[in-house]
Length: 383
Image 1: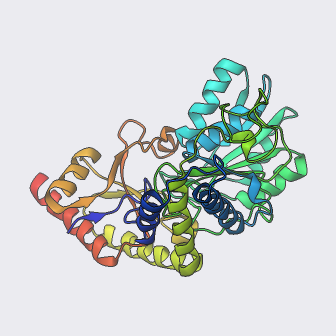
Image 2: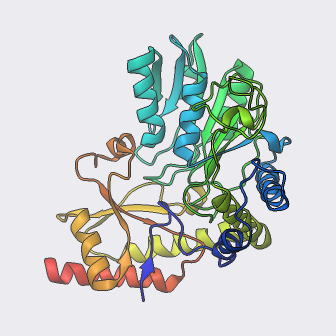
Image 3: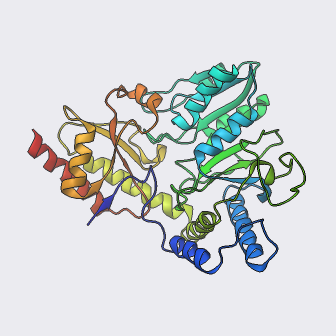
């Protein structure tokens, strides 16, 4: 039996309703949303809008029209950062950011002349709100923070940061790649102005889906321009949502699959999902501690983390461990820098990387047992 423990990268398997909804749309509809007045196109448009409504409800956002679809959280973050920042603007960010944020900011620093302050974090990935306060300048335009680190799993104090940003009149952009679908997110209560999310992780949807929730009145320059299905004689991108930030034929089949995933999440309940993943995390931390020479990173506390556990084994290369687990034990984990080298600097693994397991809702204790037994088998063969 193949065992999948890379859910921080993308969740697998998906609820059966997801591929069924995609199949049904492709086979029985196929119409393009917003591009026709015939019945199937209107039906497709309605299904897309229903997905916007479901996402707005999930994040406690009051305007579905400003739930903008993208292809990924990376595109959503680029859309917000490139669409808002101007020369001389200052950005405050965390020491844990994925390259989806960090590379975008560094490119804007080089090409546009923004400047960046990085808030320090502990080796467990914990951020002190006082350090966020200290990083703010009169030119600070945006505070952008990951909600939870994809390397260490540590949950960041976004509600406190959001309150600070609101008090200072600074935009607050949250990268919810690791948290949407497993931790409740309330853009109102947490003072989130811009929420970037992806469909293919804990929202349990297909790849190629994501979005940006615009919970503020801010001018965002479109990342791309093109057809929107309406106002076609107008020579510029429309200024109303969602058309202002959506151009070209959208991924209707993926969005419909995401809608089915959202229905599944609603039926299961985020509290149930979080509770199961927390229990598996605690079980995994205890079981992994029995592996000789293992080095565990991060908070090692399910209440402070999403289901991400990074580790190394002293004297062994992460890629070799992952290869053995896959080929000999049929256990799939991640190895390397996980596209977030800044987080690895905190734990001293920027040249080495780590192994990482990502726990998902469809994992079971038996999967953790197979991982631990596989690691012990690896050590027997390689010590």
